[in-house]
Amino acid sequence: MLNKLKEWARSLKRDITVLGIAYSDPRTPLYAKILIAVIIAYTLSPIDLIPDFIPVLGYLD
Image 1 (cartoon, rainbow, N blue to C red):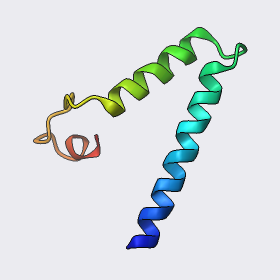
Image 2: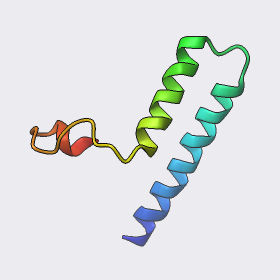
Image 3: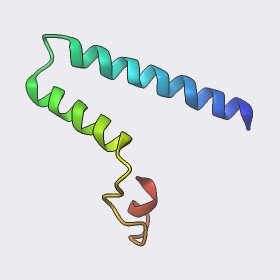
Image 4: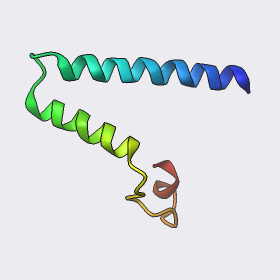
């Protein structure tokens, strides 16, 4: 269980680093930068946009 949690933390750190590099690269198109900002905002947002009572989708977010 602890190894799985450590692996998840490592992959999360890697993914955040990749998003940061892609966002700061001047070659990244504007629409991709907007999508990155939306992904980060949705991840950090305490608001639940998809209610949990919707089967499958509600629990995925």
